[in-house]
Figure 1 (cartoon, rainbow, N blue to C red):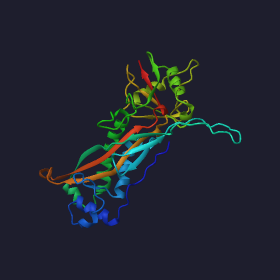
Figure 2 (tube, rainbow, N blue to C red; figure 1 turned 30 degrees about the vertical axis):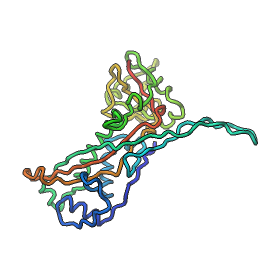
Figure 3 (cartoon, rainbow, N blue to C red; figure 1 turned 120 degrees about the vertical axis):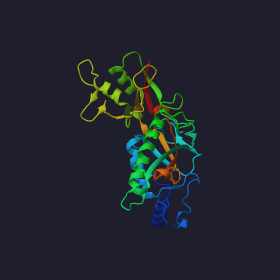
Figure 4 (cartoon, rainbow, N blue to C red; figure 1 turned 180 degrees about the vertical axis):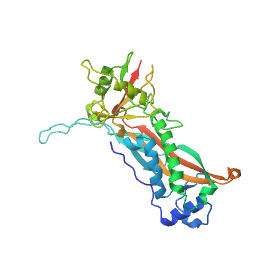
Length: 309
């Protein structure tokens, strides 16, 4: 699984200086900010140096920024294409016809779902030349945005948030339905419900409670399902998320598959706007952070879910 990411734009040292002087209510040249504007209500896009801090913090709390495919785009309402299986390759004799294939592309519309947060910073800190506003403010933004993103990548409805992996029609396919208590055999059945093509790069996803339960499972001769030495099940890495459901009837507590087929899309990056009057009586400035993202599983058969009856 490869995380593919790139920056949308390259900002200059003059832009970086003007951006933070504007945020701190210091003197700056408006011309230095021109051309790198977000929507007027959202403020200005953070400089590249700040983008590094924001993304690093977001990656720590959004596992999909590490295991999914991250795609950056300037526009929020575009169509993306992904290739679907088109038929097998075959050996053919000289001058014989090639095997026929079907249309090889799916096309999906992307949306721009808005994530927003207010972060308060005391004016005393803002006026302190030694205060590292980049790390403090953008680290806070990144952590909280990452949490909201991860939840949406799992549970999103596709309307107000991206399509999540547990969406009934656009998420992972059901590989196994466990009848009663979740067993060693149920987990093995989920493993083999995934096509071998997708098992090569597959991983497991569940919450901590489910992971703890699976650590206790043994086969008929006493071998544990979970390998403690490298945190794997049947040779594949296990990831946990607090947003995966519990092992309750009707839930899908375990996902197994190649998560690079989940595409997490971000439009433009984080925009920041200082709101100086909102908390002025408390001697603080509120910073409004805004980002637009989308996401969906582009090949449903690449990730399978274990559902409890």
